[in-house]
Image (cartoon, rainbow, N blue to C red):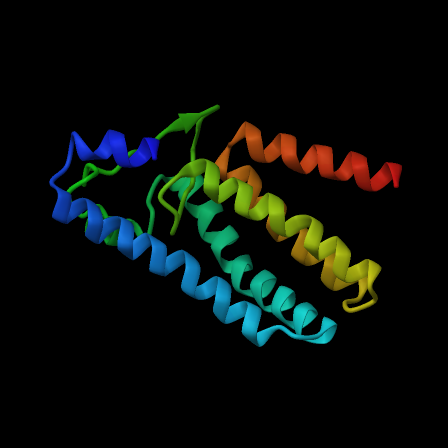
Length: 168
């Protein structure tokens, strides 16, 4: 409700409803599509493996953006805003590195995405789905994604996860 109230004063209604309607479809439709497709433990593990494999190149591109400041997908962001955001690229620098966001609009979301996938990689080892070598390599890629975002929330999340995994 707060978002509706805030944006109703700053954007025309037609732009607001088109943008938020698109967000709703982009969020709800994939959720239900995945819920329909995944109906067994084996399919869940296959889905997790695919997400991890697809995310590894994103982590590499994140490292590239972190070092060079160039986002290969940055030109696509101008098509997202629907008049509610700036089309100018935003480059934040922390400790001498650029903060990567690659395909995501927010730097924090990029880091937290990889922070959520890292424990799933370790879960694949625990369930015996992947070998130790594959899990180590995929977990390393997820750490690259976390570190390229330079986000403290993602770093805290992965450290807390590792500590909890060590305790239990």
